Image (cartoon, rainbow over all chains, first blue to last red; front, side, top):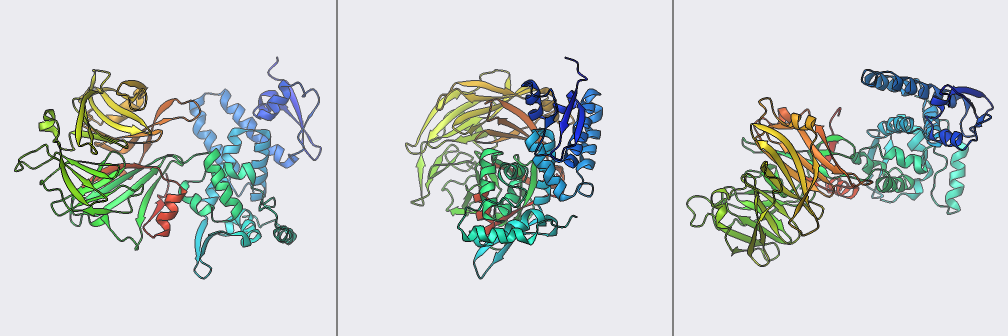
Length: 163
Length: 400
């Protein structure tokens, strides 16, 4: 099979992206679809918007290119590139969470680990235990940076706390 | 930082859900279910204690994450005791699940401060910390060593005895001062009756090596096992019967010049150094074939590049200590405190593999300090209790 075969991916908002097969199969989900011969026409990805799909493709392309060149030299550079890719000024929180969901759906382990680690780093050190002496229970609050993740949880479920 | 995009109407939806008595599964937060569990698997255990208190669904997610995605692993606890008065004890911990080193902060609520232990701090069989002085015997066997108990001292004056906790009995053997009649005497302290009794003395071959510096100790529920580090000769003591058993030969490879003994789960394990002290050729881990058997099989050999790291600048390895719990074995070299070697049994394949962890702060810390190592199975429950009683809190060091 020719290694430079092109695969077309269609995002949920109808945009098509043409990528090399080697890049597309970074996603285990897409890899299985190709093996099952469902990839003659475009592969529909109803759970991924074009904005997110573009970023995912950018990530996969970089990693495929990196593995072609010599390993040792690119390890450090690749880590630096990953850090810049996921940096929270570049990627706002909503996009970060969308990337997690996309990486989960597309089953791209390295991207999933990278995005989850980023959110985990936000979680650790951003949770503060608070003891409510009157009601005698302890809960955690998050500082402003983690509003999207934690505060909605806390406000929504504040009646359901256990100590 | 982006402003929250959640609209107030979502909160109204949640209110309705609560009133309908619906199960508290949050579908409004972008992180839920498997993805939340996976994210939490990257959070260190010390922070998961707080994460579990954010909400009920997060509490469930923390439990689920610890069970299915990344289980807690035994911690290595490094206890430093200053050799100068007032002999303060401080503790650092390593969590192999999250790859973080932590300092233990002692809360003001701590009632029995081992910080003022008036004797040399020592450890035994991975789980016991103790100090023996003519005035008393102090010891701690809980996972984070927050509770200390004190017993009257043994009747013989002992300088460096072997001490082990077997069930509800504390065994103190050997290490007696020259002035004592029987340098090999053994006494057992019953924790419930608070009384000492004298038992059969240590076997004669241990006459010159009865101090804990020469002997490696391991315990299972019924017996104490004592191995001479330089010869490998092993004896077992059953405190219920008060009798010695053995000797056993636990060196399957005769190239071993130094070995230490321990228990990983129910299995007896031995770590041996091959070659000689000027030129260590290898390090191997052996384990008993079956529970209770005294025949050993080789489990795993340390890779060459790690053996190189074990040797210090002049290629000598003076001594090693081992701590083990469950599927983890930690090996530390006394001349190189900044590196910790571990051997872990992988869940999926059952294969053991070696690795290292570096503590950059260790070299500076260990100057002028006595070091003792213990190993503990620490979970959310233990951390919560430690924080709640005000006895201890773990703080992650800045940077890894």
